[in-house]
Structures are given as structure tokens and as C-alpha cells.
Image (tube, rainbow, N blue to C red; front, top):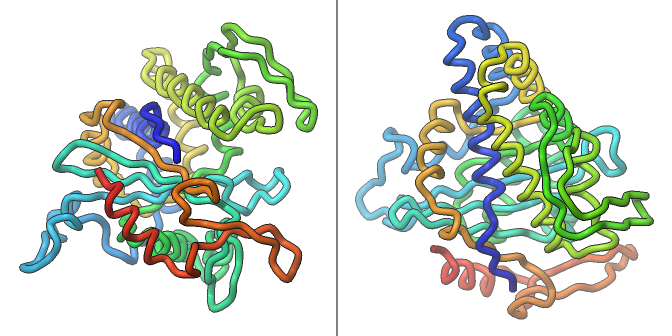
Length: 327
């Protein structure tokens, strides 16, 4: 198990997106058409109805669990994109669970090699989005919420998916980012090498920095991702970006082409105010692995693939564990 109090990247992503929305509002009608077009592409239908805590129309009924009402659970997905091997598969599968009453949050990372039931047959969980999306627009998010919710024993209210190609483009639109590299990286597999010290990264350099994994651990990579996203937040808050309508227009286009979510703009703004008030030290994380807490095991399947499965071949222990971990 790993509890990392520095897990703040989902908070940063939400803030960046909301900053763009606020910037658009600041510039008035200049971006009305672009924003409308982007909204139609980015926002998909929320078949589960959203979180009661963000939607007054979903107030709890008599007898409903207070716990369910106080929590907002968001599924965060990341995929490599069309130009990356296996680009349709989700490299990042995480759930951010926010307790609106205690102002605390838990980030849960789900292993991409976990085998789950998708449309009646067993597949790795990183296939769930594209297999669901093949059934129709928005179904990828709906199917992913259902599958991850069943694994964790939680209602998943929203999803947010980012194509890493969009991550790269967004960095370039922001004018690059400034990052201090704590220790050098020498990745012979990816052919990536970087020395320690301060660096100014463009989009391609940032993507290499956050994705390199063969010379360091997944924990190191997570820390690098967090650093890059904090740097993106700083750039998005800069007066140079907020005062540049061309850059804002480009950012809207990038959002339209590379982000998908069922969080409405109104809910996003409410969510931004909420996460803004959560101190970074109140955000902890848990990474599911075959070494942590004896909940999962790995094996080679009959088809010769490496796979991860729950102990006991059911989710009962996992549900109980997550219930205890919730902030």
C-alpha cells in the first residue's frame, strides 16, 4: 500500500479546465460559438444522474445513506491516443472520492491488467472505455463507471477522460512549463535522458518526462506527473494566458478534441469551488497491487496474458477495504 499526501493531479486538472471556462466567460461573447461546439463534443450524457451533492435536483430521499450523499466519486481515465501503441487503452484508471462534509479526498488507482467482465466476457479493465464507446457516444464513460463502481463497491457519479495527445498540445498552448527535475532520468527503452535541475519543457518534452517508466518506478512517474500538472496550473493562472484570447481559443479546441466527460459546465464550476477548499494534505491515495493488503493476485491466463484478479474471485474483501479507507 502507498499513501502519498502529494496526490493532487486530479485537483489540478479540474482547476485547469475551469480556468478555461472562466476565461471564456471573461471574454464574453467572443467564444460563444467555439464553446458551444466544444461542449457538444466534450460533454456526454450522464446516465447515472450525477452526484446529489452537486445537483439540488438529486437531493437524498428518505432512508438514503448519508454517506452516499456526502461523497462525490469521479473516475479519471487517461489513454495514449491514436499515435501511441495501444493508444485506445486506458493507461490511467483512478477514482477520486471527495467527502464534501470533511473536506477530505481519497485517490484510488486501479491496475490496468485487472481482468473484469465487459459485455459478458473477460477482458482487461483498460479495454472498457473503447469497448463501451463502440456501443455509442458516451457509452464508454457509462460502461467504465459501471465496471469500476462494481470493483470498488462505490457509486461512480462522473468520469473525465483525457487523451495524452491533448495533454501535449495543452502544454504548448500554455507556452511550455517550468519544472525542476530532482533526479536525472536515463531511459534506454524510450531513448529519453534528462539531467537534474531546472528545465523549460514544451509539450513533447513534458510528455516524455511524465511517461518514462523503465529507469524509475511507477511511484516516481506519478510524482513527475503531479509536478507537470502543478506547472500547468501555474501557467494557466498566469496573466499572459488569461489575457490572450487566441490562446484561450486554442485551449477550447484542444479540450473539444481530447477531453470527454459527463460533468456539465455548471457542475464543473461547483466542483472547482469544492476542490479549491480541500487542502493538499487532505488528499491521500491508495494504489491497488498484488503486493498490497493481500487483495489481488497475478497469474498467466490460458491465453498467455498476464492478468490480475481479486482474491476469492469476488469483490467482497475489496468493497469492505474501500469502505474503511474512505475519508
